[in-house]
Amino acid sequence: MIVEKKHWFSLSAILLIGAVFITFGLIKRKIYGQESPSLTAAGNSPIEKPLIEKPLVEESKTLVKKTGAAFPVGLQAAAFENARLKNTLGWTFGAKPQSGWNIYVPLIQQTIGTEAEAETPEFAQSVFAWQLKVGLAPSGKIDGETLLKMVEWWQSRRLNSSRYPSSEELVSAPITDFYDPTRDSALLQIERETYNAYKKMLAAAAKELKLKMTKTGELAPDEKYLRIISSFRSREYQEMLRRASPDSGRAGLAVNSPHFTGCALDIYVGGEPTITKDPNRALQVNTPAYKWLVKNAARFGFYPYYYEPWHWEYVPNTAKGN
Ligand SMILES: [Zn+2]
Image (cartoon, rainbow, N blue to C red; front, side, top):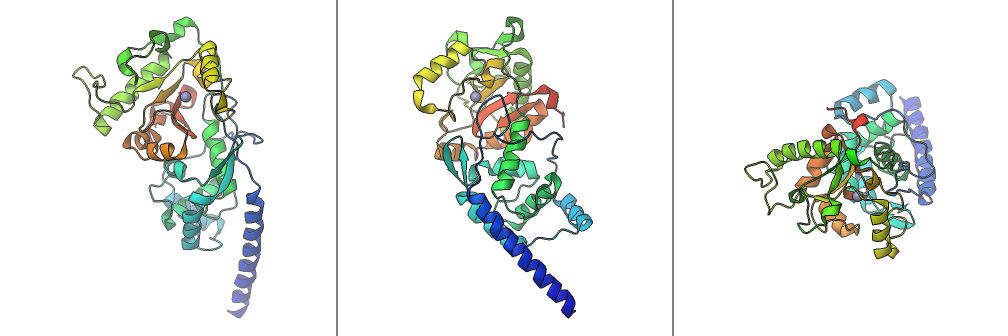
């Protein structure tokens, strides 16, 4: 018994020292992200095999048994750390300093397969299982390294192209699909398959979210949610947007936009349609519309851009229909 206790004590000490080193290491860590079609967080190799997003709690228990892994500081302690880190973890987006990962909780929950709140032991358990799955040292905490890996995974599912579609590949959607009823008729084009997938997704969402619809299955004029804000953009139009907003910088309007493909849609999920300020994004990620998209859009081939809750990309080759 005494020997075992000693072993446990030494192990705890080693883990504690390790945790201190990791924490210091993370202070300098930076996470880059951008709305660019290169799609990998800078300095990171893309993830090749898909990471499972099924509910993991049961699976994690099996994994924990199989690997003999144990929480170094306990589930409850990891949960306390997550409650702190979700608002304070320092990282950067482009050159912009970011604080915490609260805005990404719905995406994180989906990725690790839990609906538990970020400050609960259940959430920490699912983080732990995901870390084991992706080869990170499991801690149950969303630290810088874990957030970076998640960003890398989210980015890996996006469009890997800024290819211009031919005119036959584009359709002009009716203005009734758009958020702005006065939108220029030259700005209503969408890649054909993307539009079909959007309409299917909209029909499913309308039922489940009880959106206001017309008898013919269109969004009612006073329904704003899931309307299209922006779809296909030409290079010329993107340049004009950039000139109109010169301060947006690297983290703002990209030189190479996924909107060039006609397969990227900005969809209304609440708040100010496309404002990246934290309070606006925090509001958006808590709307039923956004939460529904996080859970269901992949069934229709749409994947999110984590930094912009309104930006979704149709990537049919990764659509699994699950
Ligand atoms: Zn967009």
